[in-house]
Amino acid sequence: MTKSVTPDAISVIMSNPSPDSFTVLPEIVLQVLDLKPAGNRYTFNVNDGKRKLKAILQASLSSEVINGNIQNLGLIRVIDYTLNDIPNKNEKYLIVIKCEAVSPALEAEVKTEGAGIFLKPKQEVVTKSAAQIIYEQNRNSAPTARTSMTRRVHPLASLNPYQGNWTIKVRLTSKGNMRHYKNARGEGCVFNVELTDEDGTQIQATMFNEAARKFFGVFEMGKVYYISKGTLKVANKQFKTVQNDYEMTLNENSQVEEAVNEAAFIPETKFNFVPIDQLGPYVNQKELIDVIGVVQSVSPTMSIRRKIDNESIPKRDITIADDTKKTVVVSLWNVLATDLGQKLLDMADESPVVAIKSLRVSDFQGVSLSTVNKSIIEVNPNSPDSEKLKSWFQSEGKETNMESIGSNLSPSMKNGGRSMYADRVTLNQITSNSSLGEEKPVWYSIRACMSMIRSDQAMYYQACKTCYKKVTEDAGSGYWCQACQKNESDCSLRYILSAKFSDASGGAWLSVFSDEAEKLIGCSATELHNLKSQDDGSEYQTQLKKATWVPYLFRVMVAQKEYNNEKKQRITVKYIAPVDFVAESKFLLEEISTMKA
Image (cartoon, rainbow, N blue to C red):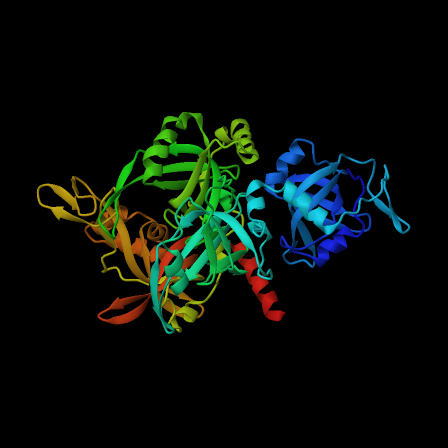
């Protein structure tokens, strides 16, 4: 076995960035330098004596490092590889798809000396013919690759929009419904799938019209496929649902073939955790997020009636905390609520750690999380993140007073309220553009004061204490909730009010509900009702007057609502935060600097 690097091997790689099975290359033997773990893979530099190149081992080769076959300063023979660009840098890195160990660690780094290569121990380079190279590669191939020499599988991490032909082997881990649309260019249909390779890397693939109709019946959940002849583009962050810089489009000429009679693989679940105190920017966005936390409490299962079909579905809320000393409520739905939720309830006293993948972030109760159909929950996972969280909780966390991320939402960058400073506009900029929110709701931040509130309006409604929907008073039997289909002896009062708000540019009427209205008015709806019920109502008027002309930061949603066959703009307050004048001053200084630039 040779113990010498291949002269100018890196130049050969650079000249053949993505070889196929017919490409005849010389034997490529390289030295491994700076070998270190990176998640479930290993990164290193390859060295041919003259040049170095950043490299990464495919996850399936990690066992070779763990077993000691591949060592730092050792030699490897690269059998299959892909050369990729490093995003935002004028550099490349080598993804080693298949290799074999040639030599254990040498005494030192291989360096060029004169025209040759100096190496201890120095041995001559073994020159092989093209036929011998192909023979050895076939001998070292997996059985499935030997029976299909032309199928060279690329890891998803190696794909980019500038590659030509590629083939991937992936499992279908999520399949969307067929959606029909109509726009200025006509009618059509579309559906999305999420694909995961054996390294756990994910990518979203979209099919339109003919491709959608062709492949909708082909893709089945859980099955493994070979896919080729697709295209890639940079992912739209507003709509992406997986952690990948690119998204894939399959057309009617793309090839999708089920992998049959082959050893199946189970993709590793890869997490990209967002700290609880950093959830603010993800509120009401399409992007799904992953979290990890210690379970603080688990609620009983409740039944929620779905609006679209009036069907009752089970729900259970759990509260989790992390080392940012913040908590958040996670709503579990359907089987996760009944099965795994019950398991968490049974072990709640043990404060288990849960890692949850693919959660929707909503503005309910300020900030809250909700599972979707493809959410994955791991209880007490065997990972460094889990061990770190357990250690923190045992040493410090269980004695710490935790605060909900949704309470006292402030605009500071560190506690999840970053969206209060995103998309800052004036009221006039919203009201002067009547087309805002026509296609879908849009979000803005404003700084304003409530300047007028009509005291004679119905400012609250009678609500069910369970689901907060409107109830009707049933003479002699309490209050009837249509949503819950039950009578209750009592109900609660919840705000639903309209008020005029003003800033330096003008004014606009905004709708405010429930908890946000309570922050604005300064008392609960029940307390305001009691003030209004007093004889002269003077305290009621005083309470409303106190609420006016107080500056707040608002996160508002602008949408179009139809009234009497006429669409009108509706502005709804979703968040309220008091003005942090230090942070506000910094923001204004940044705005001034931008204007001067």
